[in-house]
Image 1 (cartoon, one colour):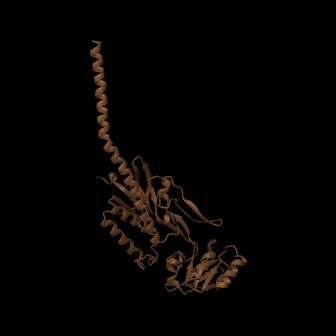
Image 2: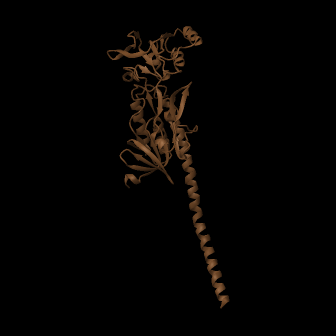
Image 3: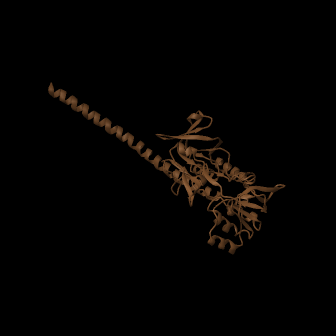
Length: 345
C-alpha cells in the first residue's frame, strides 16, 4: 500500500502531551493511529515539567520520548512531519503534509498547541523558559525568595503581581507604558510590599549566564533575578482553519491576549469528526491537563467510531435479507407476467 493510500481510524496532528496521550488511549482501544508531529513543542525551552504527578521534574524531551515509546508499544505509528491542511471527504478526511503526501483518517485529533508571542524587549526571547517566565505554578518554586519582576503588558499585570507575591516577598512591577493603576490597586500593592516602577523596560541585563537586572529606557538598571511576562497565546490553527474552523479571541478588558479553537468539554469541534485537545483549545492548560484532555478526547472519538462501526454492521447484516426480499418480489412479478400471458392465450 502506498503512503498516499494509507488509511487510519484516527490521525493525531501534534505529538505533545495531549496528542500522545490520545494516541496511547486509542491504540489501546485497538484503533489504527498515526501521529504526525512537527517536532516543535512549546515547552522545549523549559528545563523541567512540574505538577505532573509521578513525573515531577522530568525534562520535557524525556517525557515526550517516554510517551512516544508507550504509544508505539501498542501499535501507534509516530512520524515527524508538518501537516499543512486537511480536507473533508465523504468517509473521513484527507490529511496533506508539506511534502505533498496524504493519508486518510476517519477521525482527526488536533493537538497543535499555541505559539507564545513575547513582548519586544531586548534579550527577553533568549531567556524565555529560563529566567523569563509566565506561570508561577510551573516555575514559582524555582525562583522562590528571588527578586521577581512583573512586566506589565496587559490588564493581567495586577493579577500576576499579587499572585507571584505568594512565592517571594520581593516583587517589582514594571509599568512599561501601561495605563497607571488606580488607588485601590496601589493600596493592595502597598499592603503586600510590591514595588511599582514607571518607565519602559528596554532590555535585560545578563551577567555570565544569568539574568541580573532590568534596564529601563532611561538607562537605570533595576536588580532582578526573574521576569514575568504575559505572552500573546496564539493557537496553531492553520490545519483547523483549512477545515473551516475560526479561532476565537480571548480578551482581557479590551485587549486580546490569545486565540483558541472552541470545542465542547470532550474536545469535539463544530466540524463533525474533528476533535481538539491541549493548549490549542485551552490556553491556560498545563502539561498534565493537556494529557488528560487528550485522553478524554480519545475516549469520545473511540465511542464515535464504535457507533459508526455498529451502524455499518447492522446495514451489512440487513443486506442479505434485503437481497432475498428483492429476489422474491422479482420472482412474483415475473410469475404474474407469465400467468397473464397464459390467460391471454
